[in-house]
Image (cartoon, protein in one colour):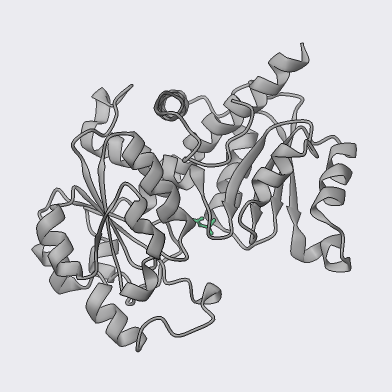
Length: 318
Ligand code: CP
């Protein structure tokens, strides 16, 4: 696997390979191995043009656990502020020894641009590009569902027969797009629900059932997992719903809605959360919540993704 750019482009067997290798990484950590020598001598650059807590830190932790050297690049404190292009930035980082790049960028397609033009000699991993995709988030979400539902017998399993309901700001969500493609490929049934202006028109062509009423969606889709999304106010240039209070009443997982869910239904959120808006504390902090596990599992998924993309480069170089 030379690059990891999207889940839309990922074959089912490649997705399962990433999940299974992440499970091996998790088991290795459980057995006390703090570091593996797999990427010793290689340099990974975290090229972040947008803010991040979970993704950037977990890619750094993943690279270090594989014994790679890590360079953290933040566009806000770099020569990007003086007008330097993505191409020139990439070539500068290559000259400084970068072999693999993890990129987050506000423009959809930025990771693909970097990969297709070979501006970096090594692998490119998309850590979120605009409103397009966030493949490692979807992979860690699928991993978390698989572990919670199948536990010790999770290995090599798909998610056939599982129902997942994604709730909220679908329009601006790269997490939703990556999850729809990945969960569908793994055999899950995916539904989405949100206010009509936050459901993209084109979604009717996607492998997904669309609802606008949250309570109806919960009744009809009978979800094994409910994935709440953040309202992305930073990407909104117009009013998409009358008020935050009305949004919360209609599409928030408040205490009353949470109480109607069966106790085995998983509560997910990619973070960062707006507590009290799209999700209540009672749901986020419940035993059904996987939110902290998702963050922990993200390190194993990112170890797997870095290993597969960067070892493909080493094999080509031999
Ligand atoms: N889920 C996610 O991408 O979080 P960060 O923006 O903190 O990386």
